[in-house]
Image (cartoon, rainbow, N blue to C red; front, side):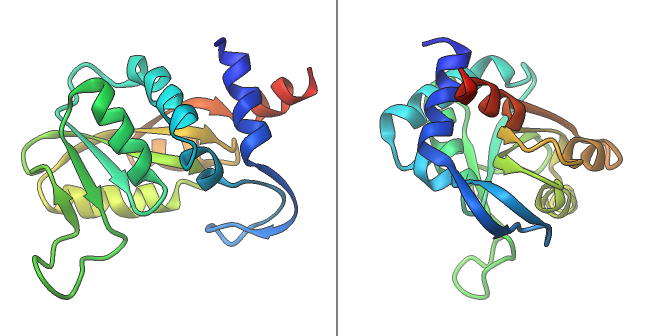
Length: 176
């Protein structure tokens, strides 16, 4: 499967039109419903396999953000052999009371994994929290970059964003 084929499959599975409010608070007339490609085990496995070359070689832990980043990080961890941390939006108030479950992050080079990035807001918040816990965070990797300022917002926080696909990749592949 080519990069364009993968983009077309994801577009077919996940692209919706209508009126949507994004996590950033922005309104959008198109939406990429990540759960539609994350729920397809064959498609998710292909996504993870294609993301492997984008993982920086000095990465020690993959950190998936709640909720959509969790299936992606699990699949990616399977392909890379790297341990995974599962990062909540807020630490739970019971049990371990941890923000990041799974692999230890303190003193380790951590790559944040997200499904779709628009403004980068959740990555900024989570990176700050992970850094407070001792993680070394300088990169983030997503499946789809909506190309709406997320990369720039992350760069301002010292985080380099890489993406498997962009919104333009998906639209171009669907137009063929």
